[in-house]
Image (tube, rainbow, N blue to C red; front, side, top):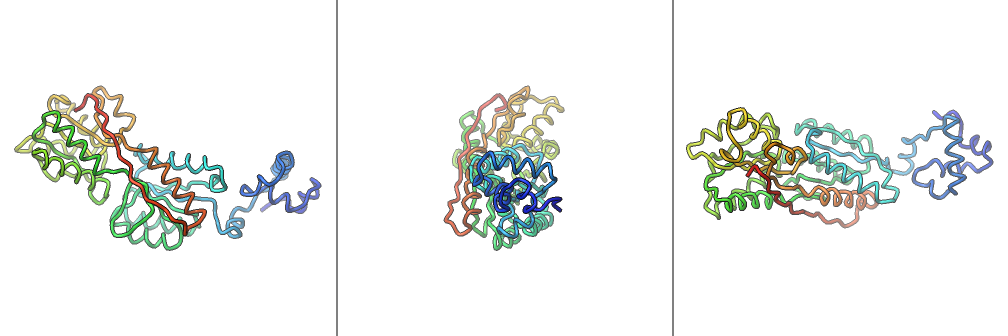
Length: 338
């Protein structure tokens, strides 16, 4: 509760209550002369005055918050995209630029995703950005979108159309297969991420399509990590090495999986790329400083983040405004691992 009312604060400073209200409102402070605004804000702070942001949100119909749902806060690519989204919002220079992001981790658990989406709705966020969408999340995403703008970034879902900012993951898988074919590999494998995510399904589809066109044999087939983590990759190495047609190269669906494979090879006394070439996806910072730097696909972080921010600004300002989903192409970065 404020210790001093706006009327009392205005009397103390010799200004109208309306001037005090504008000076203390982030959306209207620019309407007050700089010197007056700073004097009011300074005196309000000394008097212990705090703005009731909940009441303000009810009056304005806007909470000045954005819900961001992420599957894994340890994943560098998700964090980098979130940073780019926040930069894009802040740099807008409009009233939406002062919105506060509320970031929540769902760990790819459908029940947790549903709970967090409901929490965002109860908190009256102005929009939601889901970086975590899987096919299992379609119903709660639709429910949330009936109330507020829902934007997808990084991951898409089938069965509904949402404003989206995505990477062309199928193209990314395809360029890996093309590269391996150009290096003379004949038998290759994929270490796929969990296929509930369209991200990994599309990477797999692009890779397999080019393998078939270029005459590459995929062996073994169907190696899928339970989670896209380093630890899960280390569990998969035995299956890959035991294949009747042993591959000479592996496309890991993200860099964490690729690094896990490389570490498992080192523990077995195997050399990368002499015994097994490895290609990852995302271009995380660690991959470039390994003893054997990782060949990988560079994720279009800036483009995806900037477009997600553009969609946020557009749809918060007017939920009925026209929007365009966009998909951005990644690029291959060749290093020593393949």
